Image (cartoon, rainbow, N blue to C red; front, side):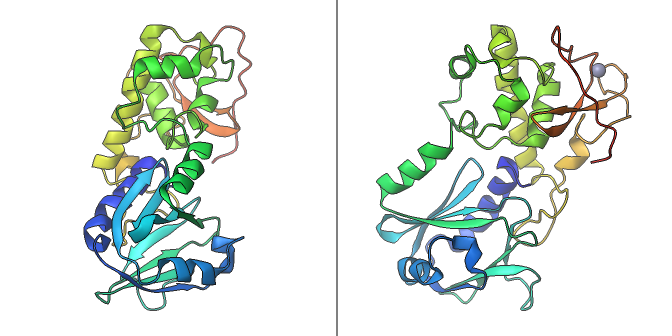
Length: 286
Ligand SMILES: [Zn+2]
């Protein structure tokens, strides 16, 4: 599933191509994309308006158009936005044509991606604040903020990181990579982390997200850039999807566990399990 670095990669590629352009046509071929809104309502709100800014919050892509009308896109599991895709792009659910004749296709084999509308800045803020916590690459994400968010919570740190209402944009890949770099076991209760561990985690979250963006995101499953090319961060994974391989720090075997219901990769020498943790390893390949 595209996480923050993958969405940011798409945003950076598309922003210079779409900002300042007017949306000439919008064709929604799968109405489930914008349910419960009628596709006609989206067309009425967006067609003829200029794209002022292509923005991002967490894993949401925000098409900020004139008059504070915003199309809020989430790519979910398999969604991707392709610039000038082939005429018969497979799994296309939405086609947006710009006034310069170029077009964007939202292709999404599993059809979990969504398009929503916010009219007015207050509506957009309400939508985002109900769903998203602090932006990890923004100025508000500090060690102190992380400490306040974590304080008193018994949730395992991996589950905490995946909860978009705490820190926005981190998913399974970047959580594993950040925890390994911070040498924190994913099952450690987040409220039990010491200040030095929180500082290390804060830095590691930023570092892996920035490294992911620098590499153009990760390509596993279906993620593609707007030009159809793939990202390369998967080649830099230190533990994620590296079960059975040697830990890059100590050489012990990377193992796969279940944390927050997700396949989770860890070196249990570098990331010491918390006392009393009941660790369930996962045998099935994932
Ligand atoms: Zn190790």
